Structures are given as structure tokens and as C-alpha cells.
Length: 231
Image (cartoon, rainbow, N blue to C red; front, side):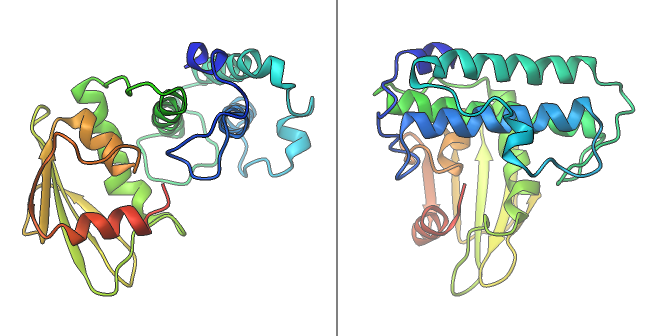
């Protein structure tokens, strides 16, 4: 991702994040990496809230965006590598351990924003390994989808099936006026979308259209997903 960022003009629009420019994309991900690294390395029970604590040096200049991003990414990687297996720190979704949670969450956070950077550069997104993409789908549909302010919604209950054919995995998601919820496994659905895990991963995160995916059932379910979710 650092290579893509290095070639991006700071004011380049990021089409998958309406209103964002490349500068904001780098600022966001660099701040998130530093925020997570601080929490892991200091085993914090609560996340750091002040920007001057997360970025005491302040925002980078436009000329140093790529270097600043790489430094934050290295800081995060080092924090995870050095963290003990029994690390205890703040998390916001269920996981086998806090260390596992942050490794998974930051990997998928970085992956999706890599797609944003590639789209901003006018590139076709680089695909993901099927098993890795399926894990990203699982995190999104089983856990991340329940985060306040992020969930898709609809006037009435809608159910979507998701099938990653190259990973032999499936999920069923329901959303409507209340909390969205997802579970592993196939089930009855108003609409089922299936295809390669990599294509599903970027589609479900609202980064790419459903090109190459098979859609069976009510397309309105996919429209509501795209229009109402804040991923």
C-alpha cells in the first residue's frame, strides 16, 4: 500500500470514500495504526482519545505522507509482534484474545483501505487470497456489522445470503429497522449473492460493484445494503 500512496497526489479523490482525498485516507489509516499500536503496547484498558496523544508530532506534510504511513504501519506490526499471548487490553468485538482481535481487525482495516488507495490511483483493486477474504467477510458479517452507526438498515426486515464459492463458506445476514445480525451458514434469504471470496469481500465493504457475482432473488436487498451501511 505504501507504494500506491507514494504515487498518489495528496488531493486525489478517493471514489470509494465520498468526500475524501488521498491525504485524508492516509491521515485516517496512519492515525488508526498508531492508535491501535499505543493500545497494544501499553495494554490499555481504555482507548486513547486525545489526538495529541496518538499523534504527538502532528499531521505529516504532504511530502511525507508515504513515509509517515510506513512508520505507523511498522509501529503497529512491532506492537503486535512484541505483545504477549496473554495480552489484556481494550477491544470492541469478540475474539479468542485481544492480540488476535487487533491482528485481525487491523489486517482487514488496512486491506480495505488499500483498495481505496488503488481506486484513487485509477487502478483495478488487487485481489485477495480466498481464505483471507473469507475471514474478512466473516469478521464483517458476524461481528463488525453490529457496530452502532455502521449497520445496514431497511424499513422492513431483509435477509441476505452470502456464498464464497472458492472458500466453501456461507453466511446469512438479516437487517431492518433494528440491529443487523449475521451468522455463519446458509439459510433462507430474500437475496443470495455468491462468487469468489475476494470479490464478495470488496463488494460487501461497499468498495466495488457486484461485477462477477451471481445474484439470485430481490436486488433491492443489495441496494439497501449499499445505501444504508456505513463501512
